[in-house]
Every structure is written in structure tokens, then in C-alpha cells.
Image (tube, rainbow, N blue to C red):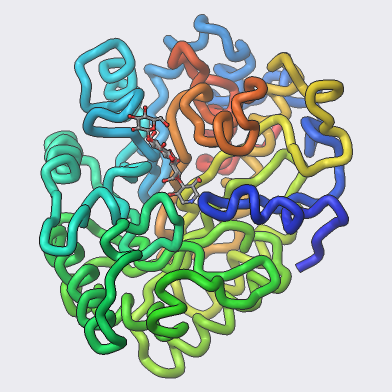
Length: 411
Ligand code: G3I
């Protein structure tokens, strides 16, 4: 992978329990397109609606728009549920507003947290499905599918303590691990169309991450999870999911090598999830298209699983908090972000044949709830990475996605 001196390798320790993001060159907050072009009205209905800017006056046009009806693949969004902050399952203002947005624009949900390991399997002999089942019931009641996330993830926060402290020998570890995957995949079998089976197994240099699972089971933990998931749920599409793989490079190549090996040995895998926590200026659209195409050429599905596009890029030369960063979401930045969303959707349609499009999911509803604010920006300042503003009003970015889905020029 071509990483700049300001690459996220330097920050891998800081974010290792979550995610670390790569970015090359460019100034933070700088646009990947011509900001002025987006304010020019487009011939498309969606673009002309978008040109009204991100203020609340555009919400009425959003009601006329229904994003998911523009695509013949799932259009998803990650949500908080149960009693998490900004849960969609609460009957408070945020819950009601978010459900209205979901039901208008999305036909797939991903649980941002409540289907991770520690939530579903809090003790060795205890599984907890109530919150996930309630979310699934809500989705079912509204004709929405649920992409399940995730069976195996190294993140320290999400590996249950009991698993970290499990003292069995290698045979016992393997049995315990398979039971984890099979019990959870089995519980949801027939109700979810797809799983992120293993999340984030590689380091940036393409070596295997030294996760607990790798330490206990070797790298075979990955194929074991896929085989166990297939056994427990023969119908669901099984994805390998990772970040920083839409830019080519060592990590991307390692993922491709693993996929080729799985295909050669008949290990069940249906697709690759590209998380796509990207930036305005990174990766290039060409790199994104090549990365998608490499997976599609192997006959696997491509799913954009966690898309968000912050305005500030903390890895770029132009970012120097608190001295130099974008502190205001100007119309120009909103327009540039609209174009960037459109360009990425267009790249997806260009590079991935229709039968291999697993869908496109945005990682959150409103800007202020994005994980980026607390984790990447350390709650130092605002950013605006998503499709809806803090009042749940649509941003131009929403219309950028719509333009991309309808093959409109990205302006
Ligand atoms: O629910 C508690 C709340 O009660 C408490 O007051 C608050 C105080 O910190 O914490 C809340 O839990 C937080 C949870 O999100 C729900 O908001 C956790 O601390 C926080 O660590 C957790 O962060 C999530 C992170 O994964 C770790 O699981 C983010 O929301 C979620 O967006 C993020 O998602 C990951 C994907 O799964 C994998 N790819 C990267 C992506 C971003 O890191």
C-alpha cells in the first residue's frame, strides 16, 4: 500500500481497538471536485432539489425522494438500538425522527453495535438476543432487511472478557469458537440475508493481525468462521469485511490473496465488505474502482458496508487542530461532499456488475452521532460526514447519492 509519511501507520496504536484510517496527501477538508460546480442546477430532479443547500428548507424535497427506490440492491444505514444513545428503538424525538428517515430512504439496516460479540455472547453459557431480535422485528415490520455485523472481530472492546480469559486447550478453544459462530449464525438463520463473518483481520502491511483468535487458532480462525457460519446458515451471504482496502496496496493484496486461497480450497465466501471510512481526498476514484473490480472479477459480491466521508482529514498535511481545520460546514464544502458521495456511488455502479452488488450502507444517520466525532476527532471539534445534519434534515450529500444511483452527472 502506498502510504504517505502522514499515513495512519503512525496512529495504529491509538486506534487499534477500533479502526485506523489511511489517507494520502492532500489538504484536510479540501474538495475532490470543483465546489462551485455543485451549486449549479442539474437537469436531474435530485440535483435541483439538492441545490437548495443543507438547511431545513430542503427537508420537504427529501420526503419526495426515497433513496432505496433508486437502486435494485440494498441501500442501508447503521443504527444504534436498544438503549444506546440515539437509539432508533426509543420513542423520544431522535428515535421518531430516525425511524421516519429509515422508512423513507433505506431498505437495509446494520446494527452499529448490538450484534457484536460481547453483546450477543456476554458469558460462555449465555447468549443475549433480545435487543437484536427487537431490531429485527422492527426491520421485518417495515420491509427492511438486516445485514448482520459481526461474528468475529478482534476489537478489544468487543471480545467478551470471558473469551479473553478462556483457559481451555487448543481443542477446547476451537470447540468454544465454533459454538460461538454456529449459535449466533444459527439463531438468525433465515432472518438475515448476509453476515460480516470476520471483521478486520489484516494489518496495514498485509500481515495477519495478531488478534486473540490468531493467537489461539492461527490464521485458520478465519476459514473456520466462514465454514461454521455456512453450516449454521446455508442461505446467508458471507462477507469478509475490512477498512482501507479500497485503495490497493498491501492490505488490499493480502485480502485478495486470502480470497483466492478460499476460492481455490472451496472455503465458503460470498463477498467482500469494503467499509469505506474514506475522505474527501482519499482514495482516488480510480483506486476505488480497481479495488471493487478485483473482487467482482473473482465472482464475489462487493458491498460498501460502512460509508462515511468526513470533511476534515486528520491525516492530511492541511489538518492541524486547533490551528487549521474546517470549523464550519460551508455551502462549498457541502457541495463538494455531495459530489464525492456521487462519485463513489458511480464508481460502484461502474465497477461492479449488477448481480454482484451486495449493497451500499452509510455508517450512521446524522452527523453528530458519527463514531468519527468521538474516535477520530477525539471530540475536539465537529464534522459532517453523513447524509443528514444534526436536526435530521437532509444534506446535499443525500442528493449526491441519489444522483449516483440514477446515473446523473456528479456535480
Ligand atoms: O452505550 C454506551 C453508553 O451507555 C455509554 O454512556 C457510552 C459512554 O462511552 O458508551 C456507549 O457505548 C459505546 C457504543 O459505541 C454505543 O454508542 C461505546 O463506548 C463505543 O466504544 C462504541 O463504539 C462503536 C465502535 O464500533 C466499537 O464497537 C461505534 O459506535 C461503532 O460505530 C464502531 O463501528 C465500527 C465497526 O463495527 C467496524 N468498523 C469500524 C467502525 C468504526 O469504528
